Image (cartoon, rainbow, N blue to C red):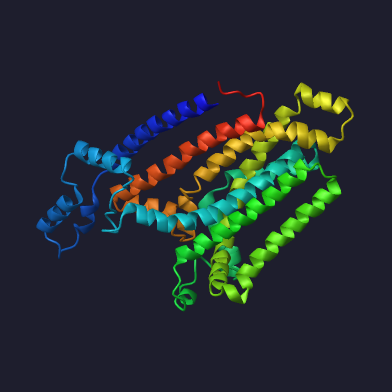
Length: 388
């Protein structure tokens, strides 16, 4: 196992180098540069534009810019943003990352949980009404045109019914009353949410390790869910935690429509993936042998079939978590959610080379790490796999 990990880490380093090189030259080769933004400004003479190029290093040949970029990358320096000069790229990423993670992490956890359970059920009861109905709904959601669907959600629930805000990630009028940074609230939300999820997972695993009967285990899980939910509610509404609770509720209120949109669109793919994987597994001999032993259908489905059908879902889930840091460019643009996706789009549009490349590289690092985590998870879930 250690040999495999060392080999995979070396592969990750090499892949990251190649990825950063390709990304740099793809972004560099696009026409124009940041100084082109000022061409139509009559108050900025050509000499000033040339001085700007020299200050940003754009007057240097491509190979010199590439060497400077790689040297900075090795030292953990992603450079200075052109469009938000003199802010470092890393500071911009730290500002926008919690917004994207808070939005897409919630959506990812929801649609994979729903997709896993529903895909498992419809595959086990295939060729029934539930199977046909869920498959049709899944295909429609998976193939729907994202911008149209997002605008439809906004038009119905934001404009016509007026239940939710039309866009952005907070209410500026409310936030002007309090001197609290938005990123501080996002960070607290992620910390509290992560702690609640880890607590629920620990209780669930403990119940399985103790081999409790179904009813006591269900009561323990529901008790843990009630405790976690009550604690989160107290943090949001308790007077001791204001105005952070009030501001967190405002962010959550603005997140409802984008989270719903991402969940519905991605849910279809997760459900169909689990369904197809489950249909392959239930044909295996060990599943037929478990049925022949007279085991209950639920035991055969959950412990023998679903556990092995989960492997492709694990890979897809881990990679989805990695690309959470990237964010959905379309979703963030439609909902005016200033996260990593919208930042990347603005960087490319404004010819902001360091910010665009830094955002790509940051996403690539998470994707490579996710591949390694997926490989380790495979070894844990499937004892037949050995990395030697």
